[in-house]
Image 1 (cartoon, rainbow, N blue to C red):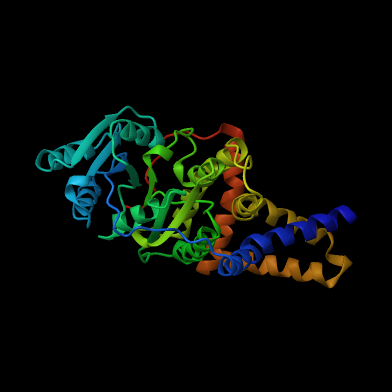
Image 2 (image 1 turned 180 degrees about the horizontal axis):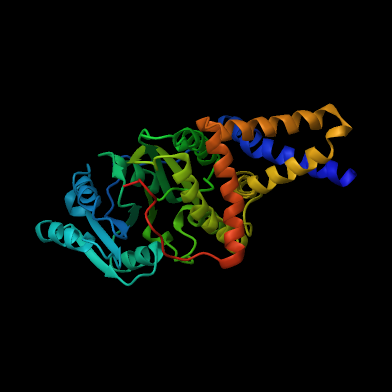
Length: 369
């Protein structure tokens, strides 16, 4: 019985901390001891914007036109599409744009995944700054300027912008979660460094770029690797990118399973917890490890609370709360369904990862183009 109670209170406390306690604590700490970035709004280094693309024929022309109209000196920007063996009209469309616009370049890569294509794009450019985005994203006109202003700080190696999800036509509630996540990311940045980025809008100084395992991706691996190197990874909330979310909680669940498979690979094999300052290590554990483990924590909480339900009213309340949450999800209440599906995705992803690992290649998320 003492073991069950330890499991119950440990899992309940961990869930409460990662979802509520840590975000509140990070926000308060950021207000008390913020570490500002020394930005230079007039900085205009040379930039290569690299788009790793796989079968993006429906969006790639629009993406290029968007980048060509950024508020940035034309002579200091190059746009590279590293096509990961696209089998549709992606290469043809990019080639047509490149024929009339010297700033655009197509690199045809063998199929190797997003990171391999990004590495190829980096190797074949020579700019001071490397910026990255997705084929289905759109950047605000001043987004690139906002990013590079942060990189003028000699302590900053990496900066990510704010992804704004368009209103979903269906039931997906990812936008609600994403606003919560962006608020937490801003607090982490004020404290020193973020624990995760996003693939839609980020940049890194060329001197700080590193090649990581192709299965990892930059979103999670770059921030902690920069901190391990004694550098900062920050968030710029005014550098905006826009994307279309998947249309439903169910399609978002499938996307999250694929994403969490890679997160487990990085967490378990990416040396994520080594050589980190104590404060940042606590952030990584609180925001990443416990969040990825939330499905396991919920299963432990459910099993222990059911086993202990006759031992006191607290256990009964927790059982009732979990049953109510599952019932609301089953009834189709969007936010409850989103939470249950995404939490369950962490468990399915871990199971998939332990059975077969993860590939380096990827497919576009359903309905996000």
